[in-house]
Length: 469
Image (tube, rainbow, N blue to C red; front, top):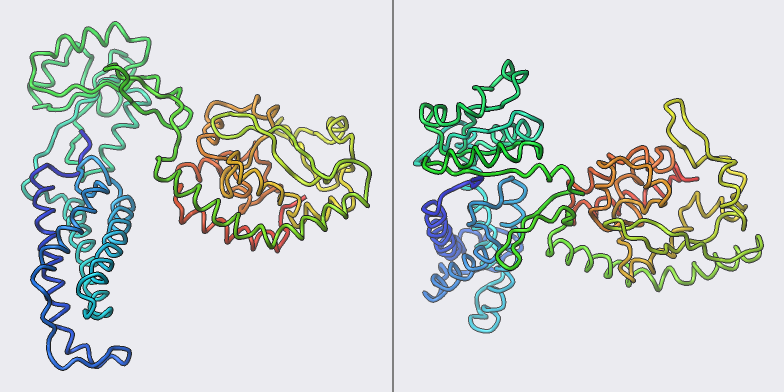
């Protein structure tokens, strides 16, 4: 149902993209002489005549990569940033492939001409798509049909879907109204009647898409409504109320021909998980030669400062609720856990606060390690193991997780990290279990660029020592 364009438009996009690439390749050759005035460009006396094979090969290769990244799939890339990410990634891979072809064949083609072609083609590919989005936003729908949507169920799920339909005009959907058996809801905006009025509303309003968003308690009513609509020319969609039980998002997969709903589906796609893991390993392996001597010095200081082990290995809750052992330098006295009740207090709202600046259990070396966050360095070994990531929600203590509300558990939909959005926005000044919304922001907006941003902010936050105790 939610698709930005039809199959015809997808085919048109393929031909338009291929034409843009061929035109940009030709312009790169023609404009090469006028660009001689640039100081960093080698002088060329005549326009460059490019081999005709490239006019076929480059567009075919570029379009093929776009097909690989589902750029032409009408059900994907609904958001602008999603489409830009697909275009950028596809262009990057196509550029590397085309450069390899030139290196093995036509090596006399200048690098500037090639980069000019790639840059201009990318800008035009992005430009016409953004222009098309602006046209749709303006309410102009060239050659596109409007699909009228009727939602059965005016509850929370139905209202959420209504907002999504209205916010995504490029999907070609028009919200018509609700049907609901609850008489209390009949006075609310958009409710056209009860479920018994379904046939009449569908026929008089010209409905093409029916979405059933009824609660689990209305299972029998659901069967009745679906059976009554079987002879009408409408598509019927069902939103299972079990989605409210999902950890972060629910996905539908097929097993032996039977559709199964995964209520604990991870927030990251397989590609995102691969990129995140590669990023973790690259940064960790690169930093270990510098960090290991420092860790040795810290271990010696801890041993000389107070009796007890060098490392502290508490049990923490990781991705999807799995328990694991987290490595830290010990910053407290040996019997710190037995003294926990002496430092835990409740704030004015009755929320448990388990950290404070004047914690008597912290050792002299431990106070320095906490202020500089050096006590977290051993978690690099957790990153190597794969039990943690460099960036992500902070692993929580199991006894605090038991007090979580359902919505707070969504923070475990991604790998837990050494640093994250919460850490660079307050740290101990904002107790983690009382500010889960910081972690949910990260879960909902994850990207490798956000990881880089958090990593850079972490350096500044650590140097300032703000909120660390």
